[in-house]
Amino acid sequence: MIRLPLPRVLLHGALGSAAQMKPLAERLSPDGSVHTWDFPGHGGDSVPEEGYDMALLAERLADYLEAAFNGPVPVFGYSMGGYVAAAVAARFPGRIASLVTLGTKWQWDPLIADQECRMLDPDVLETKAPALVTLIEERHAPNSWRQVIHATATMLRRLGQQPLLTSDILSGIRIPVTILRGEADRMVTASESRAVAEDIPHARYFELPGQKHPFEQTDLNALTTLFGV
Image (tube, rainbow, N blue to C red; front, side, top):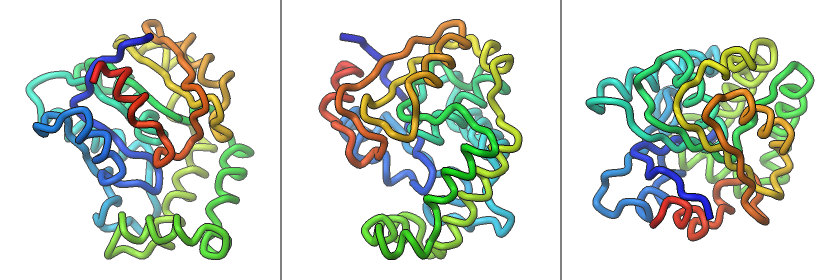
């Protein structure tokens, strides 16, 4: 069984907020030494009319880590959180000591972005996924859940046009990185995850049996066991 470094900071995914990570934080550290953090425009913070920008999220995360801690810290990032953290590791050395990602989508181009954005149609979500809509409303109140959806779609389209993480950039990451993917994840492919693990000099890749993409369906008992808890 693999053993992962116990994180100091947990990062949520797209459409999520710090609240998404709190159940894991409480399991990993009842004393509060594991922290959660809201990306700008999430968790009730004002959503920019121009949408989210992945590069800006990376800059703000780097600022937070520098201000909140005396040195580099271990980070866990789910989905978008893993992508942003990897961008910080590449662009801002010295902020992150080690990185564990789960369910991070690494491969982006215009076609992939378009496919993902089709699943972010507010009218379709309201009809077919009302529970998800309610969850997004709760996480981002008082902001409009539709505004959060539109801002996220804008970010994905930008990412499709200009990915932050290319093979050359990934190869410059010098910290230990563990890439986790759920075996049943239909959004993230094994091939793209393995390719990233090969690009990063000190990376390793593992699959979690039976795991799907949504963090809310994650087996937290299995995950915390990997952290030795």
